[in-house]
Image (cartoon, rainbow, N blue to C red; front, top):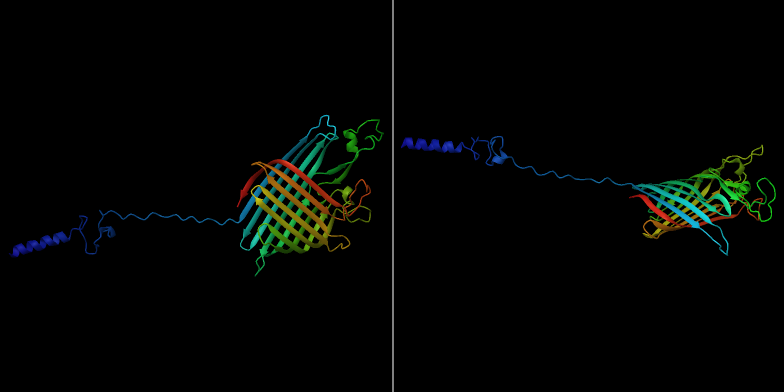
Amino acid sequence: MKKIMTLAVIALASVAMVSCCGQPKKAECCKDCSQCQTECPQAAPAEAAPAVEVKIEKPKYWASSLKTNLTLGQTSLTNWAAGGDNTVSLAAYVDGNANWKKGDMFWNNRLQLDYGFLWASSKPILQKNMDRIYLESKWGYKAPSTRYLYFSANYDFKSQFTDTWDYATPTTKADGSAFGENEKPVREDWLAAKTLKSGFLSPAYTNLALGIDFVPNKWFSLNFAPLTGGFVIVTNPELRKTYSMKENADGTFKAAKFEFGAQLKMDAKVNVNDNFAYSTQVVLFANYLDINHCPRINWDNRIDWKLAKYFSLTLATNLIYDDTILITTSKHPEGKKGVVQFKESIAFGFTYTIANKK
């Protein structure tokens, strides 16, 4: 009987030494073989949970756009009783914007380029009818405890690409002789009678304005800068008197004139819908150093009406009042100051937005 009991104890001990996976089981091995792989090498390893990749989008601080417009016009008349000229016109317009905003700070940049020319049969000369360079950069920081006010610094630059000539009707030929009966001026006669009006950096206006911005929404801003300094630059000596540059002791005129005063600027851009947009800018500048003259006014308006995917109708106007500029007209050939300057253009052409990121 003792032998039978001894054999039974040995058998039970042998069974206890065998693990659930068929290997010897130590005392410290846990009941679940998946949790004791070092002690149970034949146990299948537990499957690890798949890694979840979390993508964190970087904040976008920049918004940029680039719009181009090309217009072509042509008029041809044959036996037209009312009269007129055969004309061809071509103009190009570029409007680029790059704006940065982070928290209470913003930095807006804009570049506008506009150039066009016209050819008419009555004047066998290529005449310029559009020419503008405009660069603006504005930095602003939100004023404490306010909702719509920003401290701002605004820089702008204005000029044009090429010379502008006024082609008055020639009264004599290029060699000074008189015209014969029914004789019309030719190209050389027109070129001899032309008068220079402006040119690249003649004039050029550059200003830095420190003040405060009122920005109640995305489409409107009003800037008042009581500290505005800048220069009027006229590099061509022939035009310096026209733009009231200061005279030197020897009778010549200076190439640059410093101005310091206050500036008020209003900008508005309204997108009525996806096809119709209106923008306007009014700038008034009063010169502290020359209080005898009225404030300078510059008012630009532009309407863009998209008629099809790539075609649009554009109406643009520009009004300038500057009583320091000497304007020559048929009534005032010697020149007159305090004359309102106005330009208007309507164009139909190809429009394409190259980039638009937000």
